[in-house]
Amino acid sequence: MVGPEGQLTMSDRGDESFAPPTAQTGPLPGPRPPTSGWPQAGSSYSGPPSYGAPTAPIAPPPTPTQTTGAFGSPVHHPTPAGYGPGGPGSPLPPRRPTERRSAPRLLTIGTFVLTLLLLIAVIVQTVLLSGLSSDVDDARAAQSRAETAASKDREDVSNLTKRIQALEERTEGTLNSTAVAKKVLPSVFSVRAGQATGTAFAFGQAPNGGTFLVTNYHVVESLLTSGSKNATIQRDSETYPVTVDRTDQQRDLAVLRTTAKFQPLKPAKVAVEPGDPVIVVGAPLGLTDTVTTGVVSAVRNDVEGLNTRVIQFDAAINPGNSGGPVINANGEVVGIAQAKIIAEGADGLGLAIPIDEVCKGLISC
Image 1 (cartoon, rainbow, N blue to C red):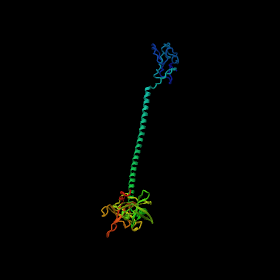
Image 2: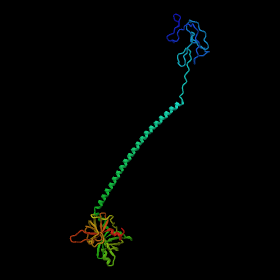
Image 3: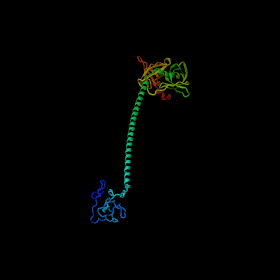
Image 4: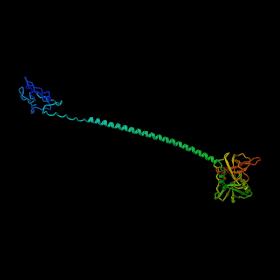
């Protein structure tokens, strides 16, 4: 705007760089070199318009390389680096080209990401393996506990089995004379051989399908002396013919044979010992099915007049018991009643031939 004295003033909104021009008394300053990005020679741009009457002559037209303002002063255009305000109609500064990330930088970032992923994978795998190792340890501990429990159970079963066996032995060692007698009586008979009587029991199968019986030699001795081998056995009012098959006079044993079939008794598996309970079955004085009980007093081989070992027992026997079986608590034959020692004031001194003497050659046991 024009002031009161004809001077040019700028509004408050104007740029302070537009101060009133002063009269130039000297030569004009030389041309500035052209600035990159601004109008060059030949441009039609003539600078900002003038306002009001000039106070000095208008400068001659600028040279092709110089751009001047309305008052002859060169126009100072800001450089692109500052991006300051320009004059009216100034072109926009060129845009900076966008920098591209270089390939090495991208490779570095990718390597970092890959390393991080590998590290995470290692950590996860370590955690999983740690959990698996813990599970394996727990399984092994459980297996060890199970094996220990199984071992203890086996030990308990073994101990229980031993106790059962001990109880069975004690039970077997306890004589139930009624049960034993009931078991063996069907296999025991009275024998009549000429004028002599005695007892015999079934003990083995004969080859022709009959039965072998065992008795004492002295029971059939008179029969054999008479030249006969035929005798009879009796049970429950039934009589069966028998013949003397073989004898052992030295051990006082004889084997009879019959065509009838009877259940043979079995020999004892274990030799008797003093204190073992026994029963004796026979026909004293012809009284069949007589049962007496006692215990083994001793096993000896020093009895005068006998050439073999004998079992001494205290069960009562009488004439007619000779050749009868001596049975243990299991119903097995341990010996053959042979005789008893008769002395004044003495009782309970029965003698029996051990069953293994029969098995030494007379009958295969």
